[in-house]
Amino acid sequence: MRKQVFSAVLHKEGRWYVAECPEVGTVSQGLSVEQAIANLKEATELYLEEFPRPHGAQPILTTFEARYA
Image (tube, rainbow, N blue to C red; front, side):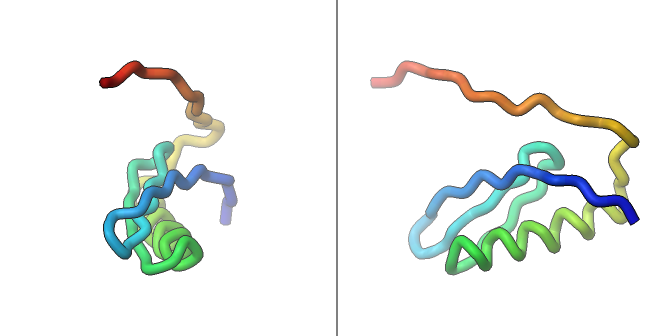
């Protein structure tokens, strides 16, 4: 069984923390940061069972600035 490190991006919506894995596109939520990440891990593992990533596939993760009013 392979292992890979993924990113989790979280934001709060009301009382829920929403967690997204940008490399895979999975999303989950929880009432705490820890719960949201645990749920995201489970969702990502289930997704990868059905749709495994090609060996050596590494996305590029960066940041950018955007102007807004």
